Image (cartoon, rainbow, N blue to C red):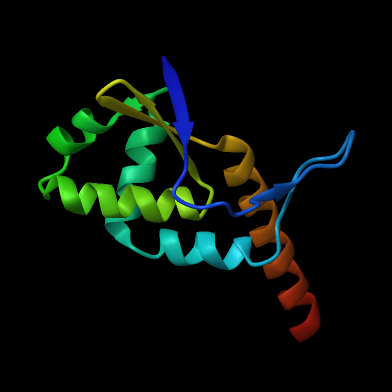
Length: 119
């Protein structure tokens, strides 16, 4: 039996029919804060390198405690960047590529508009 869960109930994206998703209010800032930590960014890259990444594999790949990995995953989930899925005693994670794309789009938009204001 597969059970999906998340650590919070943030609405992470708005999706209008026929349009790309937009980040929910405050989501851009949550993602930026989550990605500001280099270890968290490394975890996101490791998770993105495969379709599903088991928690056990992350613990083996990173020289930190399981509690630290768990904390970083919680932050990535709260930012909406990662989904976690429990299958029995195992937890698998996967990157929400739609959220990553929406974040990148918003980042480019904000940087471009800041440049237009100063230029």
